[in-house]
Amino acid sequence: MSENPKKRSWRRHFLIAFLAMIPLLVVYDFLAKKDFGAAYRSAMKGADRMVVRVDEKGPGDPDAGEIVREIRDPALVAEFASLIECIPQSMRENRIDACGGSALLTFYRGDEKRIVISFHHGESLRWREGDGRPRGVGSNTFLTDASRQALVDWLDRNGVPEPKLEMMGKWPTPQVEADGGESGND
Image 1 (cartoon, rainbow, N blue to C red):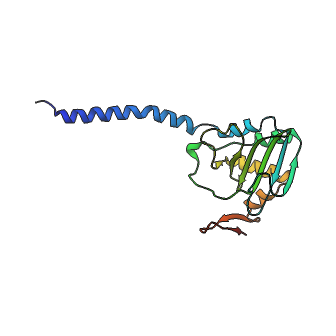
Image 2 (tube, rainbow, N blue to C red):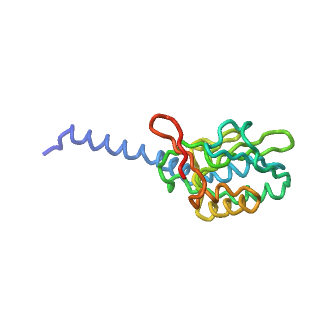
Image 3 (tube, one colour):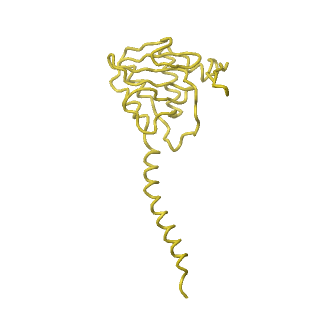
């Protein structure tokens, strides 16, 4: 008794589809393990100045707003960059954060603006401006627990207490309301 040709065709199509998915899984696994922290550190490499702006409504325009701290020590700027460690893409939470962040950090080499990032709730970074942004970095890139604490402590030690205060619930966090307006979160 011969096997039904339609049944054989279905099995063949299933096998072909299954085999075709293997390269996709390999590419996904590669991207999931990509170290986005390295991309941030690379963009900051050679920076000799860091300008920090903070606004209770969240930073907007990278060139506007009150400058709360300007760090001109290249060793301190490099130390900050060395503390950035991101959670692999495959392990991060799928959340969207629409706020502007609690601090806007602009890194310069001389007068050249290298990268602008916003720091969100003491837990994630957003690449706002700058060359070299790898595919997949754009929305929030979540930090490891150790990196979160190290960056918040570093900023606090260097005259920027707002991210630490925000993590402690003692600084207004910009919240986007349903109507698109913002409200402070005390």
